[in-house]
Amino acid sequence: MADDFYLRYYVGHKGKFGHEFLEFEFNKDGRLRYANNSNYKNDEIITREVYVSQSVIAELKRIVEDSEILKEDDNNWPAPDRVGRQELEVVLGGQHISFTCTKLGSVLQVQNSKDPDGLRIFYYLVQDLKCYVFSLISAHFKIQPIQK
Amino acid sequence: NELRVSRGLHRVCHSINVLVVGSPCLLSRHCRPSLLTMADEMDRDDRMQAVDKKKKGRGHRDFTEWADRYGGARFRELDPNAKPGPTASVEGWVVFITGINEEAQEEDIHEAFAEFGDVKNIYLNLDRQTGFVKGYALVEYKGQKEAQTAINEMNGKELLGKPIQVDWAFRKPQRRR
Image (cartoon, each protein chain N blue to C red):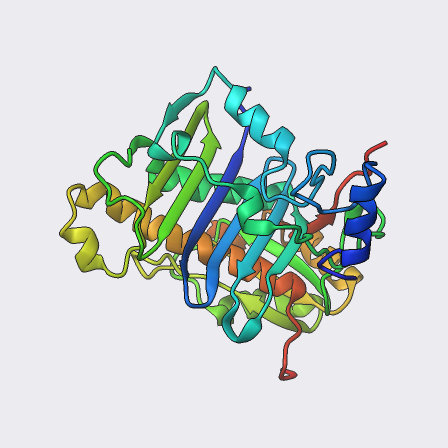
């Protein structure tokens, strides 16, 4: 179906504090699932789920389309390793991308890679997606500590 | 509202070999992790079988193990029993705005939306590469009526010379029968 849509992002690593990861997923019905896991100080996984409106999904599609990530490929991106792993899976406009990459620490790492232009698109899109999701999740679930 | 099933229930579901609804036992084949894995079994199969889609990327060949990540965790909602339609957030009602001029500032948003009620919170994110406003914002009001009025009045209006769209941010899903 041409109007099919799905987006999932994961970033994580395994280490001293267990499998620490952040993952979120949107489906075309607007179901947003969010998970953040760490065993730091024996903490447990945080999960959240909320349905967002079609306007929110439309804006998400616009952000993804404008980035032109769908024109890219992860062939020449640094593969996931001990440092960490990122996954971006998107179904949009008849395409289904599923990219993997190691964690990206800086623009310098992007610049020195084998595909700096493509990787830079990924690098900034991921930041924009995180901003989007963190704002939605905070607005819906987070209690403000200080009264304005 | 336990995130993890109790050990007792796990033993029961094994001993009587019955599908226990809601039991997040991922070790046994008869216990299906219904809503508990990030990608529902059905969603994942749909995506994989979508042969009309052009596929790219290493992730298609290098699968992740969902059970490995979630081992039984549920996804927490605010209020699983709310009626369909727009839904309240934890402390108010959140309105979603798009089409915002890239030079807008938080004060511009506040000014445009304060006439409908007390604005409790504003999120106006920047594009991480350019530093300009990304184009969307979230505005929170205390009451549903204030938020609904803001949506009715501001949807399609101009803000700093550009028309904006205003809608609810969150809603309840249609109940499946």
